[in-house]
Picture: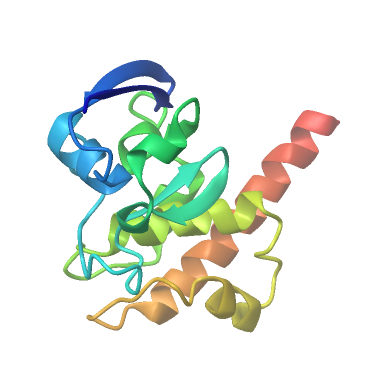
Length: 165
């Protein structure tokens, strides 16, 4: 049984034929759309390496059936930067050495972007750690990650204040 779905992925509308309705969004992104920045870690929704934004909200793409996202807007790590300019969260991760091996970094960054967009980051390190707790880093770069999220939050707040003025 074949199923056709249409998604907007990184601002590009994509229509995909699914031969198997059980294919996950993660596998669709990586194997069919060649967007390999989203990582397959545990494949059980426990590590957060597969985090993407769907309709502006963080999800574990390994637990999400692609067919259930028909008509959705998906943002992956590949769609975050604008041209050659890093997204403020990406820039903050670089500035704060918020990664070591880099495997979890795309999921960490997407989760941080979602956390900030949801208005859940605030300016409290403990709140950020709690909000990012679904993303694991085996290298232990948590301090840099927390600092990066707080820095990006401040940067984005300042940018929106300038736009409002």
